[in-house]
Image 1 (tube, rainbow, N blue to C red):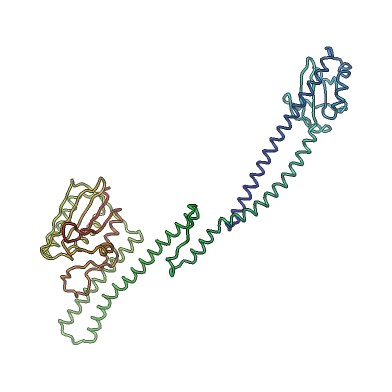
Image 2: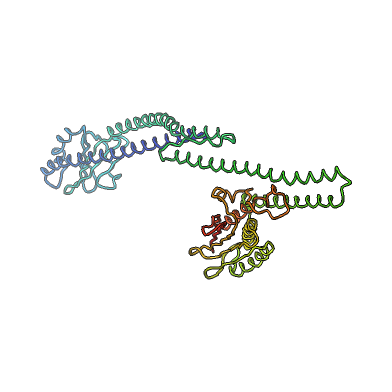
Length: 461
């Protein structure tokens, strides 16, 4: 039963056939019940006829008197009814001629009316009626009814067989009709690969399960295409970023190998440049490993309820020292009543230091970097890092959290101007950490002056 068409056809045929069988069975019960009620009504009417003749006989009833009173009437209706009259002891006082020597087995009756089974007479529908000191039994043969319902049963079998065949044929047609859109979806989905991820499944505007399935698959292909493009771009960017330090290390190594008689100062300078590139390479690899762990969902936070005021005071001490080293001022501004917040203190410190490092890259001596901490709503806390650098264009702000996007700075180090600072993964890492905290991070242009502000919002609980 691997085929869905077969399963749908099988269950459809079973349900339709069972439903028709149930209806026919209920109809048979209804017919039998009404037929028996009709026979009981005829038996009752026949007793009224018999009663008129019994009233002509004086009690106590004598056998000859009963025969004389009932014989003619019972002979007329012998084709339809059996008659028997019993005395109080159960002895037969009168029997219609069609009974012969048979006695109606009244002991099988539990009530006044019922169905009896006799070896010679067959099935009878019998009514018991009391009149003075005698009991009158009037029975009707059910042979015609049995024949009727025998024919009915045979007709039912043929009907069920026909219904089964027709339902199987209709089931196959309906299942193929119902599954045809799914087969089309399957064919299109099988055709979509890495070479044509932009292709989508046509979705009918019916709003049914098929259209919802098509919409779901298209959404999945959207995510796959986005992930595929992101991975492709990430791989290309990572290769490019890794190629640069490796190329520099190779160039310096070849220079040392080709010139064994280099002065000691030049040799030490080449080795120092190699160490710088190796350090940059290690940092890049660490950042890539972190993002890979975050993307795989294996990064585990160690949340703690942190006293926010003490936590920010410790961060401010380190931030002040980093800013003073570049002759930049730092200011911590706390608004609202400080409280506790549930965070991973190590990773959030990494976020704040990364934001500070980016602010310092665009700052010149004398600039001010301000860090705000304030409540935002009932269960959210907002942190804002503001600098006085040149700011970013709106298009740059949209891409600032993408991987390998370098923030333009003043490049006050001894590195070449064409050698970007950092790995371009810092803000991408910040985004991953904030997302792990179920928070929000975004960059905005300052509206009061030139500069950039990065906003982090975290739930307090």
